[in-house]
Image (tube, rainbow, N blue to C red; front, top):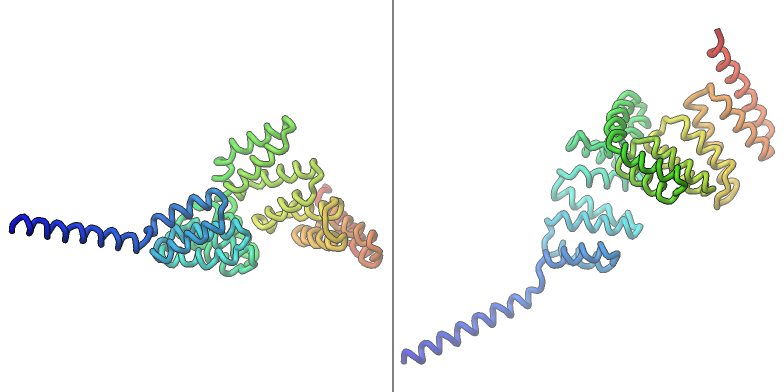
Length: 315
């Protein structure tokens, strides 16, 4: 009897183990499995597969905000920034204490010209992490747009000091590469500096010079446009952009490039009404496109600006 009882309990034990294994198999892999798989797929550039894996991860664990962040990153890499927004918002809804994610979301909103939302996230990043220079640097543009020049200057100076020190080695390495004629390496190093220290103006200007030397005027203009977002009150960037759009050969309708040149040069004059070189260049452009009345008006503006400048330089 006792032997039969042992056999019976043994059968029950094995049935229990079998059912437990079956239940585990029916449940499928865990959210951790799908998150790790999504990470690997994203790293390998298998973005569509990564999205599927991370979607499943979030279904299984809706509070796992790192997966939401990775989904946002993957969509950005797929050039689908609009699909990244809800995932970054979801992540911040779970854990608001992520200054870098606030900056990333702010940059996406800035890309779509949602300036109020961008400003809100950059400000939140600085509130959470006052040392976040990436956020401070982005805020400069918005304070200028709001005509709060003192706050813009304070943020810029604070970020620039720290970033200039931090980027010193990268700038030196890029300059050495450029001196040796290795423009490709130099450009990559300058791009790295800009990515890590976006307020370091010198990196943009040196990278612009490399692209201009290589006669890649579209790339040169793109660098200056990026700098313009960081320094919207910087007269020099508008001058360089005006000359680049007017004199540089690049794809696109010539009329568009002329309009871009005029827009930037006029902004330079708005910032500094005594910039007679910009006035004369605008007059030259209007002459070139057969708008004689406008050409004469800007020629006269340039003459008056030059007289003012000479008066300032006089005794």
